[in-house]
Image (cartoon, rainbow, N blue to C red; front, top):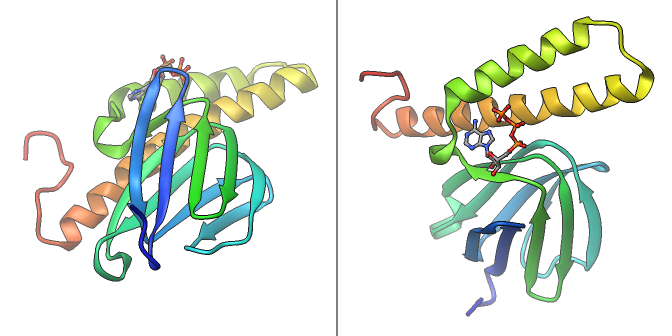
Length: 155
Ligand code: ATP
């Protein structure tokens, strides 16, 4: 149950729930810019763009989790935040090498001769892969900042 200082978050994709539970705040990339939703936020509906979604929990919202999202919809109402995402992965579940290879493929595709629509699609693809890499990077920074293990392979 959400108390006065938390709000219930649910992040779902077509294949299942990626995150849910009470949160202190969530920062979400939307087509209107990045927004941070706190408890008692005014109701809103927005479109999600590729980027990193940051969930804050714990005392004063000090515990952060980063998710990569590729697009979708956001609904804030009453004491809940609902994210319906095209794809969403927790940073720890992201295969960095796969995202890196996909990024290179997207950049190569963009270097070719593309129609305007194809270019827009390629740019969205690239943003999706960059968001995955950014989420991994942010999670690694957080762990290193707390003296935890780094993301360096083999460490
Ligand atoms: P790739 O070319 O690497 O397969 P893609 O763009 O085709 O990437 P998506 O269509 O965005 O992949 O996603 C397909 C599924 O794979 C989704 O469930 C998504 O969460 C998952 N996924 C994609 N890339 C990664 C990754 N680097 N790490 C973990 N899961 C991923």
